[in-house]
Image: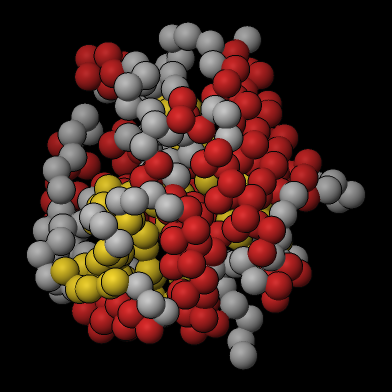
Length: 319
């Protein structure tokens, strides 16, 4: 069995993430570098903008899917978005669907599902040239929002890591559209400028996310992230969990005892519109990784590597 790939959770952020470089877009770029270095053969996404009802989960299977609309970006970015040809693989989608069925899920293929910004924004930085993109499949979030359901989905997909197929969940660390400062993006096409201090309760939840990843591995990783839905500040951070659950999916792909020897790490973050936190994580890294762990200073612990950038940003933004 070959060395398994790491898995990733990315916050897709607002449409401005198609344009404005920041720590999150740097993380997208590093995923692309990692994918090329490892010679990946495909990507299986769980996308937060697609929910399915009851106990169902669906996998898109259209080889030429449509895309949703995008706004608040320059014309040249709109043109790129419109022209991008998604390398959707019906073969990979069918395999994912069959794996889910074999694991007891009520899974089906959806030939009309469109692909959304939650995939296209990271792809802008991972594979800006669609001709370089590997085959991909995308699946829905289940609308019952059960974290253990999504953890099991990730566990079901885990074997794909050894076949050079990347598992990525796309959503958001803190995603509350009721509290974001919409005027910044609507009037100024700007999401980075802060107009009020960071809410301490949001900061506390952000710290809990990082702690859950940094201090756990193997089965404890998935359990820790699943329990975050009971965090006292979860509902204020994510009043609907669909943007958080792709993180549980990605962690599920690295949540067996065999994964205990690998490293889980914080991948950077940025705040948008005052209250939206784009937090990013990598799970199941080999200790010799040079792309995501190469910035650690000699003698610095994994915890300090993972927490220092976020802590510094929180303090600076609130000052």
